[in-house]
Length: 406
Image (cartoon, rainbow, N blue to C red):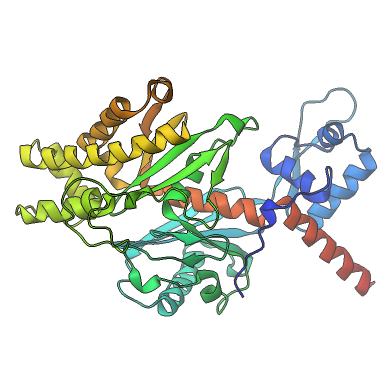
């Protein structure tokens, strides 16, 4: 069965085993004495908590802190090699996979041909085989797989992981992806919209992240958006928040869209629509980098198409900015690297947004759009598999098993 209960959304008692692990993981407290000070716990209680985490194999203790007098405190840290997580991005053009340890360090990644039109059951079987190869290439034990996160270019129902009316990869429509992986593994499988993963990759990790309000806009074959408010991702009632690309716009539709509107933004100004318009003019366009290269050539016909698309995206986005009032707009996806497209979006935003919404607005591109999805997927997954509530549950089960075997 697919996983619908999310441990990361559950509250835990202050100072519980899972809560202590949260401090160690965030490096907010990295010694037994600092944990005791943070929670006001006795040294013996902290010792029991840390011992439980060590028995679970999640925490290692080595090195020494600076002494404040008395015995030097030893350093606590996440045992990174205690488990591994995998990010999977089945895109229209490529299948991308990355493996990371429990500290979030990426150990290996691969880019493979897309799964073409494979039905979801076959596609997931292919992905599972590639995950096994990924572990072998990284040189780590396959039995330490802790979870998989899948980023899809489509609306995803939350938390079921059901794909809803994708513009591309339409054979995946209505597929409940965690259930498909359940035929191969019982580890947690999280499924998320690709634009939401870009947003997660850009979220602040600071403790005072409550002032983090931004829109992450994905500019690729499709157009998507992730919303972050008060430092938290907003998915909406069932996961469809941010799907502004199906707003009707002025302009001719050049590709079909599942939304059935005559001229939605995606059918007029997405990467697929731009590629279609350029192809009609005789340009060779196969991948997003071709569009970017043509934009750099200075060809007036290409620049006109890119600027027009950027203006259309910016016009629709301005309404979202006025409504949501973010501190920043982050452009992601391959086409965020197209200077004419990004400049037109930025210009339209500052022209169409209310002064109060635009006066402090920062518009910028993600540092590395090619890895943003994987970074977001791995962060999402680690927050789930290492959630304090999950660690508390693991400790409880381990204690019961120990008592039964005694």
